[in-house]
Length: 428
Image (cartoon, rainbow, N blue to C red; front, side, top):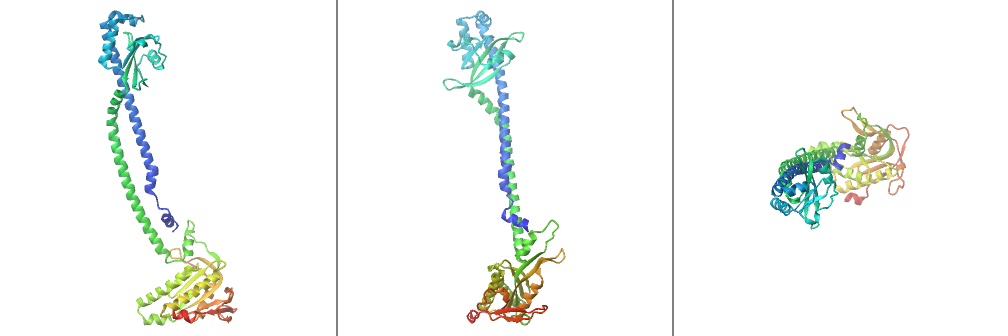
């Protein structure tokens, strides 16, 4: 039952666990997938773009060398030249290829041509140019121009017939052009997995929701069953069941409790003269009154035995609460106009609380001489009367005088006092 109570108080949070544990993992997985796809596409696109830049540089070199061969040879030899044909040939290629800017460097990293005239003769110290000269391979970096334009600087080597670097071309390309290629390259690889992942998350959420609904329904059914089962046993029995060990053993305990025992007077004759339905209805009314009074005064109903009831009250004030509950029962019964009255006995003493019976059918109850004494005091009470051990009364109040009562099975007599509701309470 402890497992059922745990489920009732803290239902298994499948949806919350999915949102807080599984969903973040899926989102992280999607983010990593997107990142890797974009990175891979960017690397592939840059490689393609650099290959195109190599082809463009070769095209520019061929066109310029054809348009101004002498000036081109001087340029490749590192000799300064101010040939108008050379500048025009370069300008035509920049315009034809729609380049933002074009630079040519010699192996000393000096700018031997620049489509912006003031750049000629300057030394480039950037690592990208050094890397191209050292490894004879292209390189690309991004930067922002002073006017705010984002561009790619594509460094590509111009190789001779032996594969040695003759010069390095730097082509400036608008960054959005490469990004457009990148977007088109990554769109298809991303759309399909993203759609599949969205479908997967949706399917998982529906599956989790159905599982959660099923768990909730089963939990509610088990909790309802637990509550119905608990209505047949005492609270102490329920607590004892929760405290069982792995072998299902419920330990017995020696306790001092105040016991309330009630019984219907002349019940046999009433049952003989009425239908079973009428008898059950009467007992239900009576037991409702008694159980409510016991619970209202902090007691626990141990068992219902046909027309009898056994309840117990623990704690230092257990006797006072047991007496108060008994008085409340008799007053309520007197005002309810029931066809039969009850007698009640109250006694405080030592009992053993434990599971009685075989493993397959046990009853958790209190046993001992004190229970028998409470039953004997109940038997000594008339209909509508309470008999209580004098020792359990801190203040006699409106109780009858102390009398000596010999109880069957006990050697020594008991001092008891009696109480019954006033005539006003009986009239209701």
